[in-house]
Image (cartoon, rainbow, N blue to C red; front, side, top):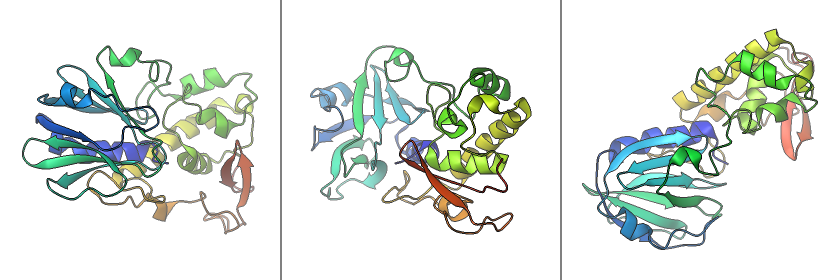
Length: 271
């Protein structure tokens, strides 16, 4: 599943090609995504100019004068800029034709993604209103995380992956950040010291920023907004490396399941 760095990479990739440009045509080939594509999407968007291209958690927000297009990439979705006239393939479900000849193409083999139209205050939308802070902002701090963790018995990995606590720390990056901070992912959130939370917040910010710089992590069929894959996977320290030597101490990494997700960690380096 595309995580925050992949979605941010997509946002940065498509923004220069659509910002302040007119949407001249919308072609919907498949209406049945996670939620039905609005039947009036073409009439709502045609002739509108793109005022901003933002991201909130894993949602891409394309703002126009009359409302906001809210897109989620789901499990396997992607948004790419392609040349006008390029033949659509089987899983290319929606095209947004842009002034100047480019097309913003939404592709989603599994159809778990979504395209919604919001004509009210976007921050109050039910999918966004209860989300935690963005991890790369000042709102996400060690004081904030430490205060919310007191008396919490949930494992720290599950705690930082809760979108009500902080958005965008998906499974890959939670594994990597906990390794960098030296924290065992099975520890209860409420037992971790404030000093360790300081290390963890710095680690989360560092891991996510590094992943964004190199274009996210390539998993299955994800590609960025310009069609190029991410390369952060080449520098993963623990995720996907269960049974291999730790990059620091060479002890064999342990792999377990937490909440139906793979967790890999070093029993020596992470306490």
